[in-house]
Image (cartoon, rainbow, N blue to C red; front, side, top):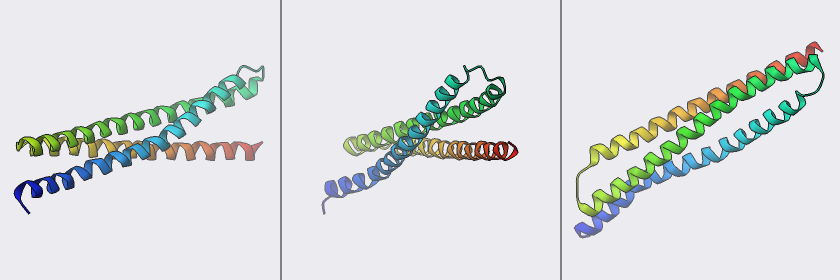
Length: 149
């Protein structure tokens, strides 16, 4: 193969990694946005129920709404982090393409942007794990409160 074909093939191989990471982040965002919309719907439903005249029930609703608001903040932060990571991966692809076309050497900056995307993806996944743990904790609390009734 000639040099141009080898460089083009190597460039496509290099671009494949950030594209796969972007696709992975998009899949995670899709799932987290579904969870976020369900939490928001639950908050709205409980807020509507909180307008009733039941004093005993309203205290329980306030606790549940507080738990759901905390979970929604975690989900929002995780989704934002994943969108930012996707932006980093997109910039990485553009930088790789630019370096391939112009035959320039911006490899250190390209690697730094890609690593920033990986760091954001890792942090977002960690935040999602915290949200899932809190979801389980609220479920355990609900089960315990129903056992006591």
